[in-house]
Length: 195
Image (tube, rainbow, N blue to C red; front, side, top):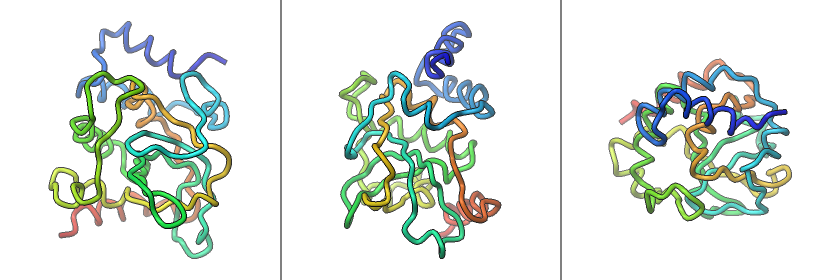
């Protein structure tokens, strides 16, 4: 199998797309949202890195078995998160899958301004704190995304997405909804618009 990240990056290069711009996010959004993705194979692809624990400010995807799955109306069994920090028996993360693609693109635009540097290499991370997200009106998209993940419910390792691949990963159709997925995006919009 060809490497999905390399294939998409090569197509972007051939199309003359400058990485990490609003134009590139729009291009990636259109290019990858309808791709077929084998989640297990994706976890083994280069440049994805397997980690035994989260690192704040980094992006991860992983398999997750929600503890309260029987009472939740829906949940994502394959979250794509930006790790925020520690939580009781686990960690907090922003699961980008809770936003429909157009809002996810807007949120990513804002988040890209909140990195510790512009190198977009191993040293790059998002600088996010819950208190900042609550105060910043342009960060209102975080509300439906903010989740508490229990370490015991993570199945296997966390797959860290390196900074150069954040745009591609954000728009890949990887969510694995369980329960009544028909109301995920309408519920998310209500949370965003609530005062």
